[in-house]
Image 1 (tube, rainbow, N blue to C red):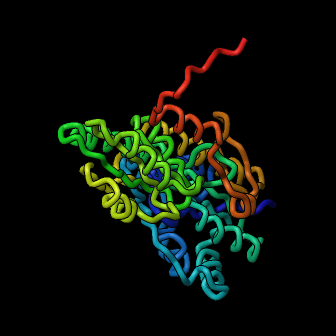
Image 2: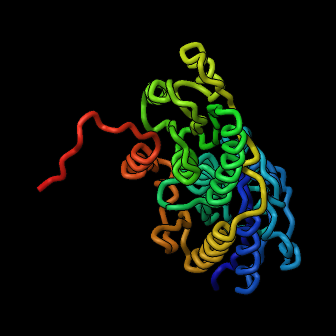
Image 3: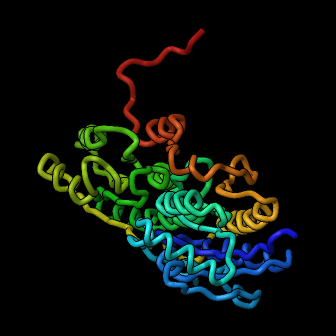
Length: 338
């Protein structure tokens, strides 16, 4: 007789709008399939401490429209140790949990991959939840679309005040070492310069732009990804202000507002698709994989690949950002090709 599937669902690492929708989808899909679901509070630390509760349909009612995660999240240094993972395993086994759905980013998946390797009696499925959109194997991660729209709204408002005073604003956005938020929000908000960690010596691009603007009375927006080798937006501003005293250069760090807020319709739908797919994967006997979303379809990606491989921004997108940002007319007319 096949063992009954008992699912534990947790959110780990940074919170992202849409996590609640994923928890809701996992819970209701599982219950409708006759499975038992436990919510594990405070991520891996709660898993170690046995901080969990059996979920019913009403527990996830009225949650889909809220940002953050009602299961809460936490960083767990203890889970990075062999002893910590052993405690976590023993804790969930006591509740009868034999399957785990982990909603989180690359750090969370690294922990999930190691745990799945050490404890093959637990089936582990990952759902990518991070505003950074930097997980290999999926076009979108939960929270990315909402964060992107939050940035665009903020930049539109900053541009209003920048135009009123002919100021240059350096707007710092999240993304860690990935420039997905920066490049897409920059294109969508019409930023004049977009600085991303995927390309080197970005400060020279700013200097070139400011020299072109030296005799022009016009406000500008420069999007700065937080993971630049040149430093933060504040540090970059301090470097360039003495070189361009004619400009009123301001800095706005958007920070954690990018993580909060009601999730967009896209995040709610994709989260729901992924949550249901996670339950279906467990019913099919799948293990150690991530539920991804590519080309408008759900895909299965080996969990270890999401940790080992790196997701990159396409050169095409970066080139578009360069071409439609600042414009310097050529010295000589370009003749059309015959």
